[in-house]
Length: 201
Image (cartoon, rainbow, N blue to C red):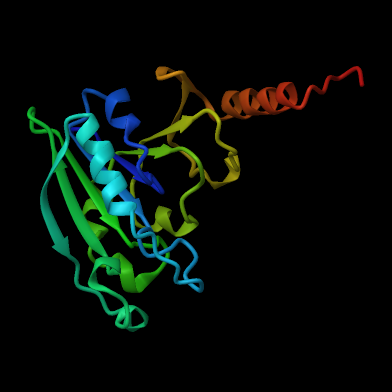
């Protein structure tokens, strides 16, 4: 099976596409441009433009835009641009980014249009924040790629997955695979080091 990588809360952080050159399909999901805080209803007017520009910088260009069907009546008074949408970007090699926007994981009214792609994903990229716990009800993930400079709640990872750490600095990255216990030890040591603590204190 070809690897399909999922990234929830990606915003315009498209660097993972460069970090995984052998991956042919990426599925990104973000609650923007509507808003990540459902009750605030403060949309980002520049979100689609930011993503489109970021994709163009790495050679990916929009080839499709689809308004997804939904039953979320609370969105009916908003501009259609803030309804759940699928944007498809491709590069000259045929690699594909399927970017679902204005989708909140855990909101059943917005999940219908993305379930098929979620179920195809074999790996999960975690950078910046953790996906909603409800995500695990819709995916069968084999590998989780954990970027550094991200706070982790290790208890949310399901058993049986392979955990990898992406050491990312100044545009370069390296990948190391850990067992769950090793990953926990790594992040505990990293947190201790960054807070300048020691066993002798």
